[in-house]
Amino acid sequence: MSIFDKFKKKDDQSPAQPVLKSKPASKKQATPLAEAPAGAPVEKVGPAGESQGVFIRPLITEKAAVLNQFNQYVFEVSGQVNKIEIARAFESRYGVKPLKVRIINHDGKFVRFGRSAGRTKNWKKAIIVLPAGKTIQVHDGV
Image (cartoon, rainbow, N blue to C red; front, side):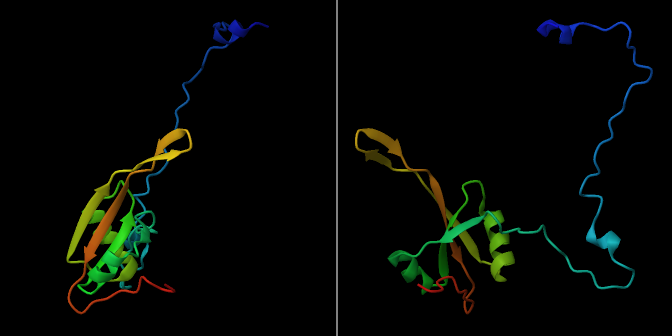
């Protein structure tokens, strides 16, 4: 048997009928509204873990502590998210709708480790402004 036997046409096998592949059912077909019984209250449920992967960690610095006095909170966020996604994730996690979201992209720094040179990764920072009188607890145990 040689390696080229795979590519040879076999005359004795002819397909009687073509085999059709069925596509998997899409997730959009099953909705919470269709599964709820008639007359039952229906809650709007977002995708599970909507804020999962958006916020990496809260930034605890002197500048962030000063901004907390003005109802502004600073977080390190994923590099692929935009202001709208950050606002939705913040509202789903903390239950407070932000007034404004500001984003700052930080370039990685060039660093040296002995003779080898490298670079730290780029990262994104979000400053989230809350309405007056609303606060969140992000500095637990600090």
